[in-house]
Image 1 (cartoon, rainbow, N blue to C red):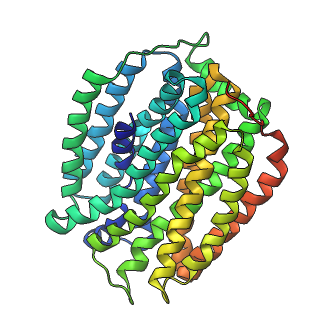
Image 2: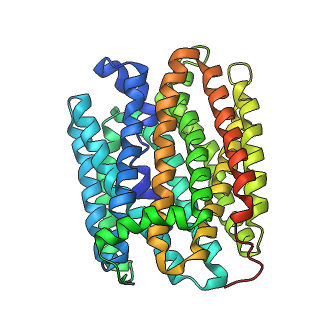
Length: 382
């Protein structure tokens, strides 16, 4: 499941190290090129809200295979596109149906034993983050050999193989809700008002992922310009630095299993704020920049896994709806972070990115101080 999750979600991030190349080919501004990333995240957010709740209505294996197939079709559209609008169409379609990853996460939590639920979520989320980060590395390397379209052809082939593997290996699982589709959609909104911990954790997720999108969207433009002048392949290698953050995921889940979710969240947010200092030194010290990336990705992943592990404990019967509500907020935050990234970089350069990131993290800390008391304290397995 972790491999499937990583491969599916990676489809939304192949464009990031290629933005400068795509911008040159289609004569786009920095802001417009950055909107490719925003389109993927908006598609993903829409899928989270309108498609993930289907996991509470239908047999999940069949649903997962259908959605994976439709996501692959978006990759094919992007591969053959000859205009920015076709790229955006393929990107939105891929993003919309790649939310299949968020049906796999609660499915893993449901199948796992109660005392191993945090570990299971952490493992799946490790696969997800590795997919997000390594997508950049692989995309950059493939683009150096075959051009920017090549990665979309490769990804389409890998998704085709994945569909076959899922059909053979994935167990059938059906936990039908008593509510119909429209009642499920409506209940997601109500959960934000009736479940304070969801509101708090969703806001934290949105703001932390906005940090992530802010950094990684602008990074391609920074590293492709002086004093770096790096190629797509070299820019993609920075995804390997961020991939270390994925190694933290299962550890964060284990700490939640031990009742230390509040501690992990607090430490994660403080580290996220501190990470922007070395990131701000990017033009003066590559080592400081790399350290900053590592700390930022570790912090964001720790908070993210803790958010999901905490939510899966409070309402077992509504895991897909909690996932839909939380992850919709998460990727709306990512979309806004991408938009802010293009604007901030165009207006103020790299310092604009750093100030924006530190400000978003400061808001996160204020929200956590307010919402801290709503968080359940788990001292033993369910």
